[in-house]
Length: 252
Image (cartoon, rainbow, N blue to C red; front, side, top):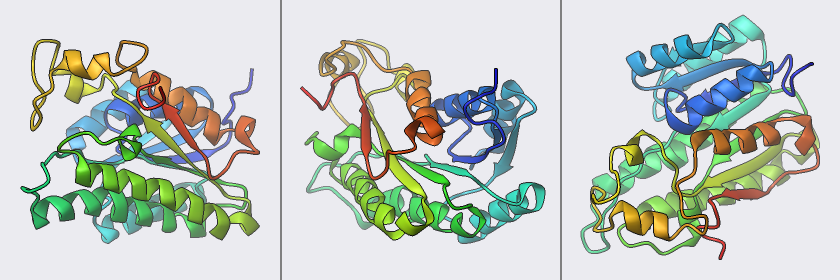
């Protein structure tokens, strides 16, 4: 049976672990030719090896324009186009209001906002009409968690980008959507089991899980399936939208 993404070429930033890696595996299962990027070469190479021949790793940092140019140059040379961009690379840091530094703000905005913006913009010359861009947001963008002010603001900017880019790209039929996870059992949270606190905040894992209506963490594969849906023709009439995949964390 043909896959939902047969013949498509996809780029996933932050593809070496967590949601990015789970999405690379899902895209490959559905027939896409997948490129994953990230800053740490050993993780990237291991991710590509574990996923199969349909996935290629390219080391690069989305905060460096020359790295993005090099990534897209390789995709252009090998494939001639990119149909799907999943701009997923992001960093999380916490700082309470009153202790926020310029360095903290610059680090988060460089990756989560500027890096994401240019990941998408530099893809446009390679993207055929009818392509799709998917951005990783977060349910914290509509919540007021302590110490998360700057990170939450970066994710609110991501949501705003989806709205404006949808109108900017309407004539080309390029769809832009946001997937906003809640707490997900990635390597970061997996390293802090119940009974422990999270770095930079007083909450333990019990508190994090208690906020989720479904009383559990999400799985990276659950986010990946939503991204795959949005990347496919099943979502052909969906654009400018935000999908919360958060177990009800920010919904009820």
